[in-house]
Length: 304
Picture 1 (cartoon, rainbow, N blue to C red):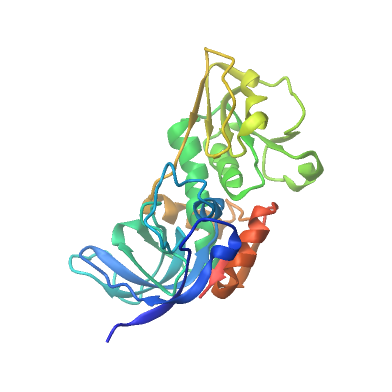
Picture 2: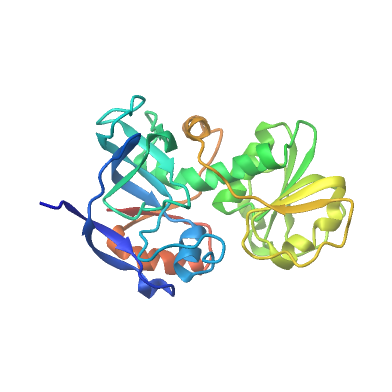
């Protein structure tokens, strides 16, 4: 008899109303995979962009799709060849955009995507951490290559990715300036300096980690030192590039369970702070998407 589970999927692109909480076939763990009983699934801006079709040109999907990249839970089964993990292990991870499937009671994916959840970190916090924190860290450490003594600007520092980028820059020994909206300047207590993202500044930076894109990112290109790099994770296109002596490019993160473990320990020690987390039932996914799209800095986590 076919085993089933509850999941959220969409069969057409559109608004939050296309998300369908339904019963689907439960997956099985294939070779090298685990079957994860999902205890919490993080909601990311990429999720509603996939749902709206904004990423269809770059990452086409065969519909229907179960969205969701960030999951935390307990290993329910191991496929052939899995040695690093065992049934009963508490783990969390980032599913690649080519796979997705996190908005469900169970998900099957490569065991190589997952890291153990250390004692002291809840499954809710672990699910809130994965993609956003990995993106911020990889953006600063790998793509920008920020080093000690350099100056880093993070545009959109109150979001989950921007917040992680600030902490990554500070761990590298850089001087980190956070750019946020004027009305939220007082909320940034974790950077070396904070500025209004809508007001020109005179400071010069070795690298810019951008999470906003568009005209906001463009307005700071003049603040890059010659040879500097602005790397953006935003899907909002940066219009033009008026300077030939700097680099402007896009960045997409990739799964890295070793880094996930390091980030989890940084949260437990207080070295890295998470944004406010709010949990909703998986069946209330449309509300989570609508509230995330409306703005704000709350991180939503879905509970199957």
